[in-house]
Length: 160
Image (tube, rainbow, N blue to C red):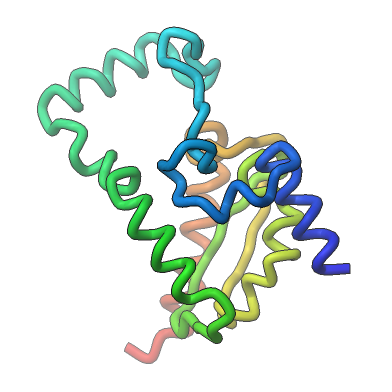
């Protein structure tokens, strides 16, 4: 049952080709290949023209280095993930995951089917309805409420 759920989720994510994850993500036919050209992708409805101007002004000051580091490191992350496949790893600190009901990248069923709580024993997962992958931008007040409640609970349980 779990295997089937993971398989279903991967099929939705990669369009029916789970073999795509066997290649490094930046190689031809890797999972990041084939994203549309920038002039073919319209501005998201969650990013207003005013938001775009704000981000543009701030990136003029700070540059893109920080935000792009995840993408620069995607190959190393892929190699590390391959090297840890099948190993029992564990995150031993409290963790919170805020997931969105309509996230097409990390679907709610993937959270369960990937058995995240097996390797993050103190993981607490909260779901926000009617939000997608950009839940922080789509539902900031709900995310902040969840974060505040979790941090307050964490502070109350702290031994400090």
